[in-house]
Length: 68
Figure 1 (cartoon, rainbow, N blue to C red):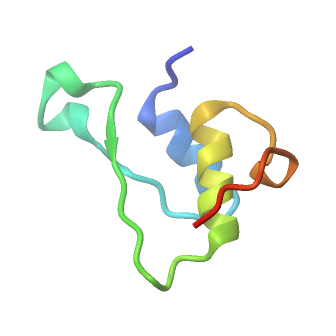
Figure 2 (figure 1 turned 90 degrees about the horizontal axis):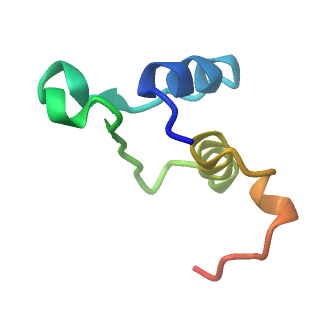
């Protein structure tokens, strides 16, 4: 299931996470895409929430640990 970037961003804002830039405004063929950015200051927990929201999966903590 593809979720609109705007709906993902609304859910992320509820968790005080700034979502991505919806690319459909600039590139209509990418209406279901967003541009995301993270820095060394981004918390792992915030990235896990983002992954959960984008993929509709349970929290990453309940999934197999990803080795960095």
